[in-house]
Image (tube, rainbow, N blue to C red; front, side, top):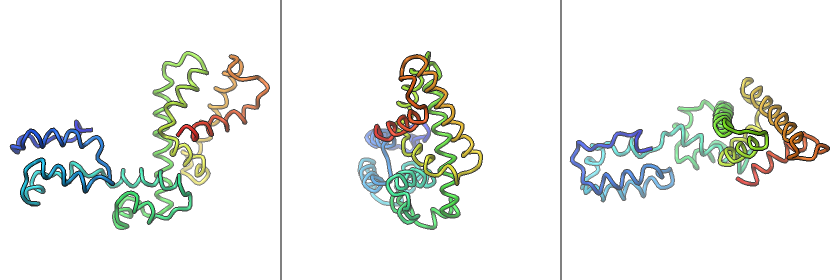
Length: 212
């Protein structure tokens, strides 16, 4: 979000540079970082790396390493549950020292991912279903909100038993709540009454992964 990073207008930067920076910030990621640096370097009309350091572009453009590691880990473990920390480092574009500065090891990273996934999913579902009038509406709104976060839901489904106790309890509770909502939807006629709720819960989760 460009608004979260004050732009250095007081340094006499050319308008083209500021415009490029505003366009670049929302899409900056690890893979494009090197290319992005070069583009903005030339757009700014800067002639040397000391000038570049002076305007502090590195800290503005570089995603926080912890956030990069978390996002990379969700993707890597979704694609390959047995992936190594080296795979996470490579995808995040960080070195081993950086990863271990934020996480002491694999178990610490797994625990952090569990907490992050649970918090993000709860927030997304609560916001999406706040104005739902029926159980069916809530199920649809929750599914739409969770599709972009399917890797997090999948991660919890695979790791909740070894997660932080509070996260494990929250995940179990969310499945129970989903089952109760599906039961209400069945009574509303959205699903046949003879379809087992356990099957509907599994189908709902699988639909989420398929949509993602």
